[in-house]
Length: 423
Image (tube, rainbow, N blue to C red):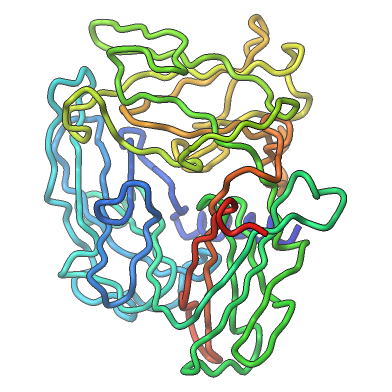
């Protein structure tokens, strides 16, 4: 309950400040990707004062040339904006223009592909922590186009962790529990255990993050977190997927491919509930998507867009009482809103949604929320089910704010895989 209330308050705070993390404000902008340079499967984390870089890609469907700029916003561990001035955490220019772009060719859908290597040598972070990359038009920060999260770490801790099966009978078969131990460097003088915070992410999803305020064991610079109530996550199942790397031929999960003179429609094989089905393991992208093509064209400015039609049949073809269904994953920015909400077709007895997607590989799941929105987190139980043996990647983030500090420093991170680090 504390986590859901915190996430709700975070959304209100950021909305009042005019910026939401991982949010696209303009409908003409699509396929936003931010990852470590050269690794499209990675999460955007860089080391402070290093040569680490990030690749930023996005498309503008207006197919013209605009003056896009970007800047950085330092945030606390809960993504509330820091009170520090921009000059306290960046060096160089505040606003940087994105000068690399190329108009699409071959594709039916006309667009302009933009690219930037972040951070630029003329502007880079000088403090560790959570950052929002803010992209806007014409060097006017009020013309915000989209935001993307990235992390800057200054390693001052050693982290170890394991994935365990919970002891509680109610979640024994459906959840995964993390056991995390943190050793801080001797250079850090911790006077109070509340100066250190740990955040746990399942598959890089901030919407379901767990914020750990109190360690189970605290001894000097050693912190251990084993509380089953805060360290356990619904395990879910392997993500559903659709392969759009080629729209010339049908891939495995395509039901129909409709090519027209000016557009392409892809109909995904109908989905249904999986909670009663036998668990099957297969490799997935853990909710992410990548822009790729097998058509021997450049994936960034020569690949095409298609209208992808998703269909979900609930049990007995009846609408879920009091709940809405959303398509969930990086393809919808892990957000449950009008852009990801499915509509119930009473005549077919199915939920339907159409998304405009660029060629690539996409993971997705179906989640539910009450029609009357509350603080309840997104729920996989009705649509996907949970199985303890599911492969998940967990990101452990360690933050430190010294006495009198004005921002949360990110002093360590670790990746824990539920198949590799399992006891």
